[in-house]
Length: 376
Image 1 (tube, rainbow, N blue to C red):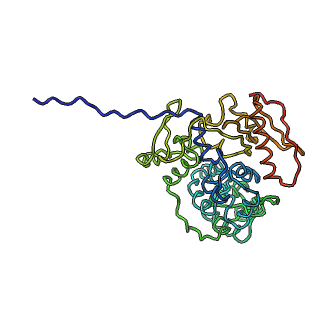
Image 2: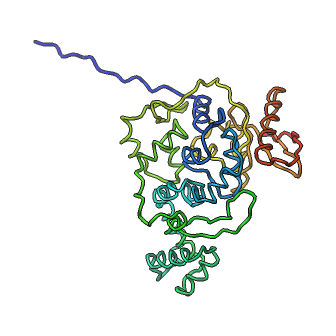
């Protein structure tokens, strides 16, 4: 009688990555461990866009990441329509490459549909397909402000809610903000046209992106990460199936709380003790918005310190973690740390602040001073 083997193959537990290890990995991919030689256009693509509901943050974001960057580098891309400003991830305005304007916008459509659902009561009797066609004709004839859209659409549907009509157009169409809005050193109100018209691409010329491809891009820029992390970044739900399809191509880890994290096998995961220089980041920087669990960058005691209401503050990173706020106050760069800094850290922060000012405000004179410590 043959004995049945009792041997069972066991799978080794996934390695655990603590906040510091996760932070160093993400900082590396975010081009924040050392400044990159990438062009502004390639950096925008690699980072899968830059959040941009305000005009200046994308410029400061690249200044913290790229070697030799000057604001005109991004402004020139905006002017020649190599990049554009469009509502995509998290239903917020992002600066994307022209290709990503046309491919990521359809991916984010479920979030726009949810936004539109909250305005349905004001759209009774409105054919949304007809509205989208009319709005497209209007903004492609000439860029329109939201007020102009409200007025024109209300002429067709006088009994509907005017604001709901304009929101419906914005939700149904990939509308970009045209220049001079978004150019460095210029001002301009928000005027909209379709991405296809502004970027010179025929409607429907780009297929909807496969979620799997976007998962891989997200991990390359923000990993290691959980399914929930990516859903937070994208403002979407039900992305778990894409991670499962990709599982054979990925490696997995666990965070300190046991949450499963996915990553690209060959992506950089530096030693947790790798030095991380200070960085001055703008409000709404992607680094602080793209994970459900942000302890890789935000120490628990400082959670929420970079926000007030729905407004984000400009933040200072020291040793790879949120360590304070900064602002330009008149002719001074004011740095407000959350806690004491060592003498060496203060010196490094001043050097980085000087570089930021030389990059972003060449020819202007600013003092650098430390304000009152902001207690967490």
